[in-house]
Image (cartoon, rainbow, N blue to C red; front, side, top):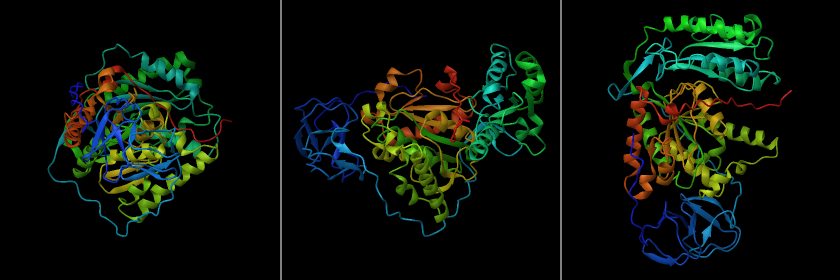
Length: 513
């Protein structure tokens, strides 16, 4: 993976700031900018009135109170007060407002192209259902919080033991759900999430473990119709003698399952079998300039070879959904996407929330003022390919090319939905340095700036900050991401895997009973 050290472009008046679109009336400051510094943009010189931190915005033109502030060629809000050329623009003088869009709906039905006959490949585990794993784990999934501790004990008991060469490990999926929840959408969503986890292509075999009396009964996951039923064992603590008895019984089952999996080997398969989740966390203003556009290049490359690239985080397309509607392959897909946005707004209104509650203090410290600005940078992860499908949280991803999944922006919940939907890799961009992974899916971390890449070199796999440093281009880093994904799919470990990150948090949408 890439060297995380970038060579800083020597600061000059011409390269102190980055203007992203000709119509923008703001630019993003590349390095710390002191008040009184001369800045030059498109041949026009001006003085910085304020000191401006890296990633924050500076005014390129006078902006009167109430006038629109433009970044990416799109509105990101209105000036609260009159702003002079050279002034710092952020939460103190830029207001948020929801925008009503006149959506440009697709008028045709674009066909989904066939995967090319020849193309790149990787070494993966081919499953009975035709999907391909990039890892080979034994999973111990808790049906409810009541079984979570025992699931962890079972997985932990194999730590340090010699496992078959083709088994990547025994991993637990503890969580706090599965009981004291409403019967209906919340239970259905949890069951869909756990079913996708049990039948994931990166899972060779699994145990579903319950207490025995919880709302989420293990019987839901068992039977001849259950995915991979021949390698799925159901157990309860109440029938197995409690924690100790279940631990002993589970270890015997896992040993037997390992014997069944002994013949599984990596084989060469087309890159079209990849399903790559696109996620971001701890974003900063450089996210939409470096890592996200570079991941967008890689996303388009995946679509071109017939693989799937899955953008998530409904809260972080708000204000940019009109750009995705234009790319929908037909009206039905566009309506599904907008239905998720509308449904999420209703969900937030139940609790008096707003999409603009999304930018965290860290996002704002990194230069992102509101959700509109954050979303416009976030959607860059999806490149320019047609939007072929939009699916609900943890629902199976079946269409090749660019897909969207309805998830929260909260990283562990979003990653859980992507994985349960069948993503066998996840590419994750971060400006502030989010440290996160997943038990059975490799998570590739891409730093948006070299400072974070250097400071958190043990967490970051690729430094896209070299783009802002002037050492590389969006296209070259996009190619690096694509090439690295292929190597990771074939077994190369990501930093999150090396550090043992195994976050798993299903999305609870209803009340606690």
